[in-house]
Every structure is written in C-alpha cells, then in structure tokens.
Image (cartoon, rainbow, N blue to C red):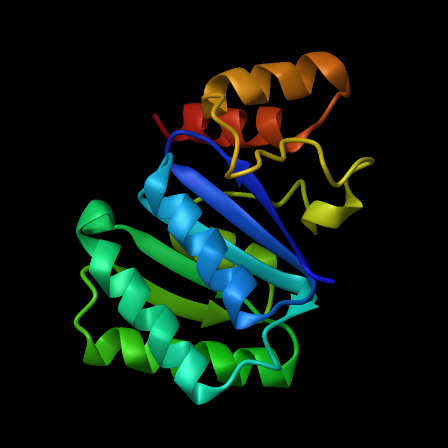
Length: 178
C-alpha cells in the first residue's frame, strides 16, 4: 500500500510517495492539496515510491485535474525527483500533458531530490533524502488535517525535538531566501 507524506512551509510543499501509488490515491491527494494550503512550489519525491503502474490515461486525467486548479499556482514550479527509469518516463508523460494543457507553472523532471530542490530554488544539501531523517513522519501534515500547516509544524517540532527536522530545515531555507 502506498503512502504520500506531505512536508510543507508557506512557499514549498514536498510530496513524498512511499510504495507503488495508484491513480485514485494520487488524484485524491491532489484534490486535498488544492482544497487546502496551496503553495507556489511543489516537489514530488519518488525516491522511495513509484508511479510505474499508472497508465497514459491516468496521466492525462491527473494533468486535467491539475489544469482545473492551475490558476492557484501561476508562476510556480513543480519538480519531480524520479530516480527510476519507469518513474522518470511516466513523469515525462505527465510533463508532456502539462505542456499540451498550457499549465501556467513550470514543471521539470530530475533524477535526484537535490537536483529538483535546486531547480525550485531551495537548498536541501543538508538533507540527501527525506527518509534519512530519524522519523519520516516529522513534518508530515495529513492533507485531511484541518489544522493549519504552521500549527502542525510547530506541533511536529515540539513533539520531535531534534536538531534537524524537515520543518526547521524548510523554515531555515526559506528564511535564508528572504
């Protein structure tokens, strides 16, 4: 069973897929994202997950769903970190559908999370892979949660007093950019 974890700040959302995700799980997650705290920049991390079982029809449906909500992310960026060939290829297909639909934000596919983060403008060099954190749920914000992302991040950090959690790292990166 697949899981999609969400790490979020005011300007950036990192979606980490763990396991083999289905089209319905991915589309439900996208609907929840667009119904909640929408950030300008998004990174999809497929280093521990896969979209390899999706079809071209699924990818077209996903792109149509994103296009329906694209006005909320004008001039944003979406980066996909897809180290495996099948995921890279499926991501390129999604990118092509996005181009055809004239989605008003940039999308690029990369092999590593570090490359994706760099393109988005976030330096995650201190974090090679989100799952290398002591607890992969640190910074996780269930998109079903009605708690604001800032409150959830504060709660995460107070419950998980670590020198480096994703919440603090993302805040530090965004503060450095300001």
